Length: 234
Image 1 (cartoon, helix red, strand yellow):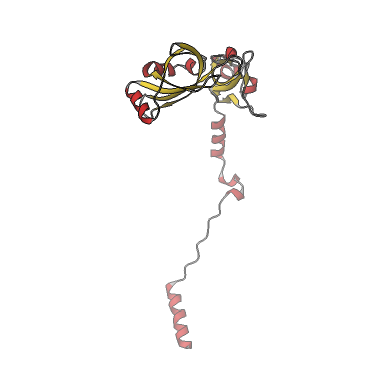
Image 2 (image 1 turned 180 degrees about the vertical axis):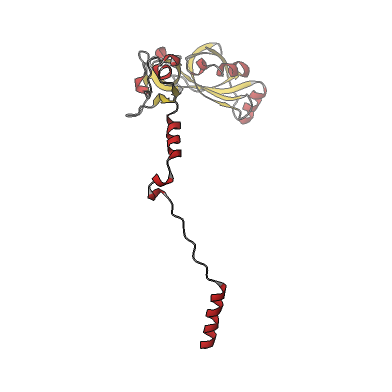
């Protein structure tokens, strides 16, 4: 995908506001062997590009003042409630240095899996993307996960994924997050129904709260008689 940008000479809050009024987005390009450069990009083409998955996980061709740069989208800021891009960051790419990227996951053949066809299971996609490290030439646009062999109560973790050659997951220590899990419909409902029909007598005594007895009330007449006896003794 291609991005067209020009060098931005003005900086500061007021300069950025002026750019936005002119329907342009302030940004920056950094990294690689060059110095950071402030840039500006036409808003509408950029806004529509940001709505495409590929724009977020691919090496982009940037045309900057007529010369070509290879970059990655690193960050962008949106207006809190209006469809306006406020700022955008790109990182230069060098062919001999690995990049770290979040790559989207595409799940296929879920409906053909034994977990669904035989067990009526519910497949949950816990992660929608995974962090990977690789050289720019090996960066995949997405990672496809085939769920056709998934069975009831099975899980797929990051280390189970079949990644393209040259691509490795970015994990810390023994970390191995769940990507996909399977649960069987009705299991939770059955447990709740059984709990609902257990008589109170079968519940352990420690789980039952004994009623707190109220202190017996003293009849008003007896109170008066006690008071009279004290007066006589005096």
